[in-house]
Length: 351
Ligand code: TXA
Ligand code: MG
Image (tube, rainbow, N blue to C red; front, side):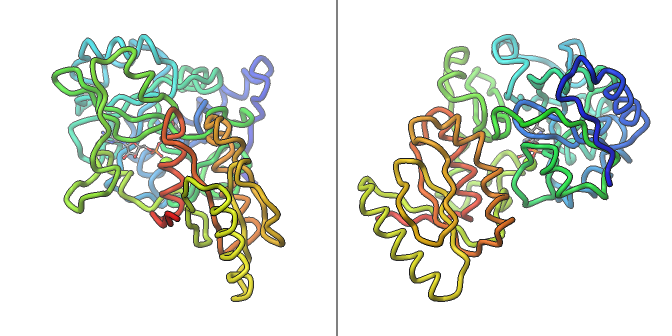
């Protein structure tokens, strides 16, 4: 089995974190907790270590990695320049779930990290174990989410072990990730406008407290065929459970529950293993279907923290037919609905 260092109580884990940091320093790949999801870290300047991360995940090589730092001084080595709005965003939201895409200093990171782009995404995670590990490694860590490519992101060390145990040098266990969805990825335009490339833990309203204007990358909605997302990762069918999932939407909660019951009944007759992933307001007696709850529609933070574990539970029960309901795309609800629609491969019925 893979080496797991228990760092749930950081004061007792100093020796273990230093050991994991040493492995990273020598070019190994180690999974570690952050406040969003677990990351799979490698020395961002070491191409063979970064290649090993892509190989362990089975990740397409055109999808760049986020570089994680523990101190602001590390930033100057990584990027060409920092705009005033970027500086203010960092002051406000770092450490935290915000990744800024900025012009890279090419000699500073492996070209595999940026997938050949002239920009690099950087963030300072808000997790004491992550910060301590980066400092122990003595280098910025390139780290994608620590899942096999296409699987839901891991929010516990057990999820990481499920996907990657035979492929990596170790896992630093820091308990459950808090936020549960990944960081918000942004790029600041020349005029200071913030472009959201991937919705995440920092909300549009939070960004608006610092930035003059915030826009959502038109490539995210997928409305027009000629808009490709600016974050290469957003074009992939991500986060998906193995079963087929559909999101059911309507103003009329009773109609939703009725529709779900009908569809579950038909699916069960076809021999499908059925499951529902719904908000509390949409709960009902769905018979033999596996019932999973994302909490109340009014608490999207709770939904974010539960979402990926729920998707993995559906797989663990071999569920083949899944119906889900949605929440408003406000606050963290924007990230929740983005991940849920990706998990559903864009299958939505409006009734
Ligand atoms: O919360 C997070 O961000 C987690 C934790 C581990 O920090 N990491 C994470 O990494 O979600 P990953 O690799 O699963 O997703 C990185 C996203 C991808 O969609 C990628 O395309 C985008 O960030 N990205 C990275 N560098 C970029 C760049 N230079 N330009 C545009 N998008 C970039
Ligand atoms: Mg990922």
